[in-house]
Length: 215
Image 1 (cartoon, rainbow, N blue to C red):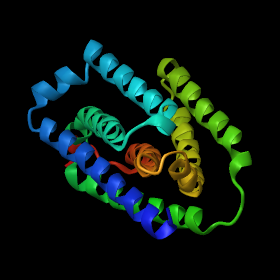
Image 2 (cartoon, rainbow, N blue to C red):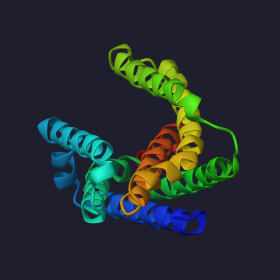
Image 3 (cartoon, rainbow, N blue to C red):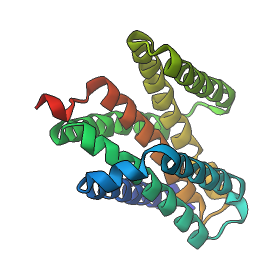
Image 4 (tube, helix red, strand yellow):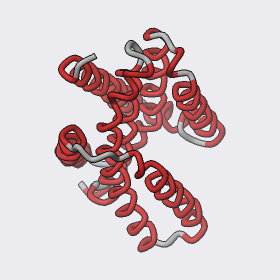
């Protein structure tokens, strides 16, 4: 599959996934009681576990996965993320969310272009990026107990850098996903970029978002 065929498919699927997530989140936020019930306590844990299972299944079965199965996995993940995103619409001012979405889109676009045009072999960065991501996750867990605002700010800045780097890395590797599976590969490539976008958006929202209470 040529670049001219592959990348449009990837970005169409990326758009679909983000659309499902944000429509789901906004729709649920219109019913705050239902939203809070779904993202609190045991319900939230179940959502996270199911998301993790879908992501692992998607990754491990990519080479043998049909386009239909890939589509279902991707849409389920996007929908479940949308459920957790309903809290964003409850906590943050809508205009602030839209501004952060714009900032995220511009940043994503710039680094996606870099990943598209770079000739450098980025395979050696895989382990480094994974270790950096795990460090961010571990630091975030530690800060649940420390409750340090400054530490949280530092973690978020590092997380932004990590996911910007991941955008370049994943854009470069989209052709490899398609090589594994020509039908499901573009959807999996979109899934990887989707994860980068969602995490980058969440980080920017933490840094720049305005609470709905401050309107």
